[in-house]
Length: 203
Image 1 (cartoon, one colour):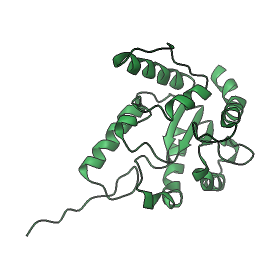
Image 2 (cartoon, one colour; image 1 turned 135 degrees about the vertical axis):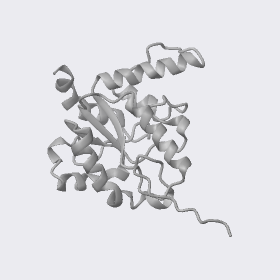
Image 3 (tube, helix red, strand yellow; image 1 turned 180 degrees about the horizontal axis):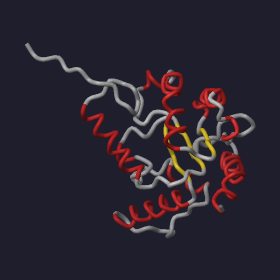
């Protein structure tokens, strides 16, 4: 008889995980740690990272679907208009992530691992308390900016936890996810972030 395999829950997403899953989470943490500010001015919180490790935000990613509009809206432009293929593109992306870090920005996720579709609707209720602990004892940001409509229920969770004064919102709603095509998302995003980030960065 073959031995049954017992997978332990992953600390990043709470789902029973294989060794490969755990190794991928560790790799994502290694990537993000390189660009974590000592003091976080604005903590952006999205639902979950990209499904492909190659597209991890802190890679920098092969896919620029989120990376480009997000950094562009924050005024972090590419150091060259036409980066050379291969290594040149990677260096340009790394330089922009370094500027992202220098501004005191950090991108974190409700789930530190990609989520199966069946988990997406219950993730906030299940992982919200863990995120709050990470914010209080690990990230300790001055401001928190939830990204995307799917994160709206998280706003109430953060308010109940006493974090309402730190929230960056758009008329009580979460900020639009960069690059989604929502009407005037760029203006909304820039106004909300610049209202708090400029003075923090100068200090």
